[in-house]
Image (cartoon, rainbow, N blue to C red; front, side):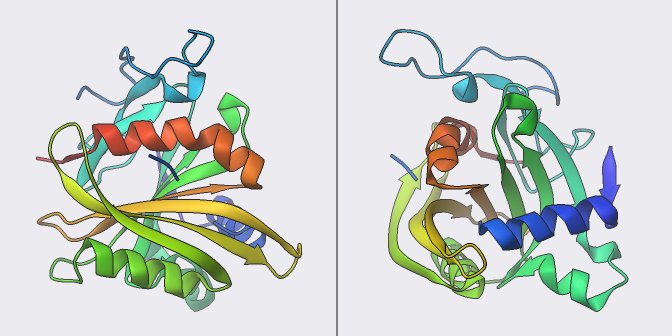
Length: 215
């Protein structure tokens, strides 16, 4: 289902603004085995694949495709259809624009993976990521590094802290970026607080590990 910009997008973006925004191929909705084992030997539900998004016909058509955690729900964001300039501004962060939201609430967490896309010819992955974090504001302790997916795709990743002026508290956040022929892509993990962030990290790592350029 494609989510046009409207009440749901406003609520989602407002939540992200209030709460602020890491570690270490099938059709959409097709279950796949996966996930890392916990210390007790059981799979963390957030690390178990619940399907792949990104390809045409999936909940979000993107320049990349990757696995999402079991029970997480993906819906596209039609940022370019925003009629209100204020809303359009909220759906853009630095060099990229919101394209997809993957909600963790069905899996019992308060947070999202959000996918942001840029234009072909924009800055490289690291430059895009720096622009994304800088545009967020009220951030600190940024730690950048490179990473390589299981399929050999290289990108840039950042861990940082953000401070909410409204809530007067600081929490952990992380994001990664890759370059594609269609432009840069940023995937960001945002949770209610640092505890939720840590609980959702396996889903973030699953997305990063299985990331491929769509084609």
